[in-house]
Amino acid sequence: MGGAPLLSWQRFAEVFLNTAVMAKYLPDIVSGFFLTVGLAVLVVIAGIAAGLALALLRSLAIRPLTWLIVFVVDLFRALPPLVVIVLIYFGLPSVGMSPGAFGATWASLSLVLMAFAEEIFWAGITAVPKGQWEAARSTGLSFRLALSWVVLPQAIRLTVPPLTNRTIAITKGTALGSVVGLAEILSQAQSAVSFSFNPSPLLLGAAAYLVLFLPVVVLGRWIETRFAWKR
Amino acid sequence: MQQVPVTAPSAGRPILQAHGLHKHFGALHVLRGVDLVVAERELVFIIGPSGSGKSTLLRCLNRLEEPSSGTVVVDGIDMLDDRRTDINHARQRIGMVFQAFNLYPHMTALGNVTLALRKVAGKGRAEAEEIGRAALARVGLADRAEHTPGQLSGGQQQRVAIARAIALEPRVMLFDEPTSALDPELVGSVLEVMRALRESGMTMVVVSHEMGFARAAADRVVFIDHGLIVEQGKPAQVLGNPEHERTRAFIRQVARH
Image (cartoon, rainbow over all chains, first blue to last red):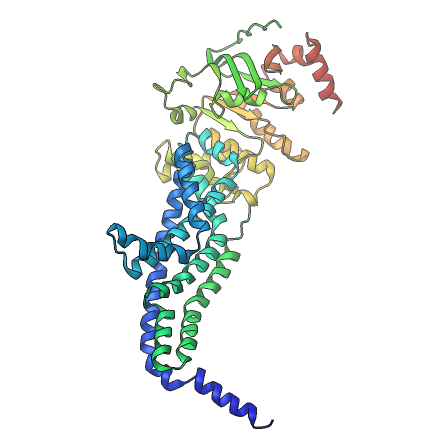
């Protein structure tokens, strides 16, 4: 019994922490890392901007427009992000558009984030008391001015914590791009595994995700306490 | 029921004229033909049971509530004519103070007072702040300009709300139960500001249960019930010796509390 665990540990290290293999494939993982960062940033920008735009359009209370927005939002909240990626990547070429792996993953995750962000922004806008609108309008502010100077600043403050959490969850979905061959972290790690016949690159990939998302999660926690609303 | 004729205001030309105001909320007929004429510098006090339509009447005067029918003319401007009247411009002539203060919690007192000055009246920051500080001084809060609403008492918040309205130099001020949300010891400071405002010649329409203030400061008391003006006249008459049984019943009820 005495020697067996040591032997197992050596074997484990050789298999999962093979430094030679890791060193060899580190550049691939690093390139996957930067691709993931770029993709995540673009998803966050597009998704939140589009979500905010939809929430603002919804606040106009034009009924057919509201129905359309609610339909689109519910659609992308209900569909698993992977299904959206596959649909766009394999479906769009049949109508003459080829978004590519990056484009398909970016568009899909942005649409999903847009849907959740719209719901969160809308909840924030409706959570601002009606009296705030009335006070603003009674001093002569137009709908647009009341929205942008009185209601939105309060709504956005309410939305920061849930939006941060949802944004982190969806940007982690960049890993789904590996399914359509996007050379992001997970995909790089998987191909390294199949070339080296050694799973160490997967651990390297996990480490890369931690380096990327751990600070974001910590930042999210900080934002959540920072924006706790004091009336 | 017989509609009581509109009392001719004792002094000043009419500055606010509402005629035949009706308001339906679905099946609910909240205002059933109200005529109200307010003269310049007059303080009209509106009383009535809860649900009588007095707040709705007030809110129809600046179109926070859309009247179902009728006319509202303020300072010669037809409030309901969307073709000729810019409602946002017109509303600057009508200040409003709410029961729940409705201050903007993300701005300082000064920010609350200057927002409309800057965004609607088109004043520059320096000019707006000068006007804003003067308005805060008028309500006794010059030293609270940089405080946010969360740092102010209820009475102070309501005074900031009054400053926010008077900074725009309105021709008429509407008060919708301005002291109902306040602790009793804070009511006095708000009534004091309203009294000073009245002495400065401001035209005021006040919905409130502060009968003492009505006796002391009002030119006219209007009793509303079931969406109609039942009785109106001098405070001593309406509050002291009302003609109608419903007015008597209401005043007995209020006096008991």
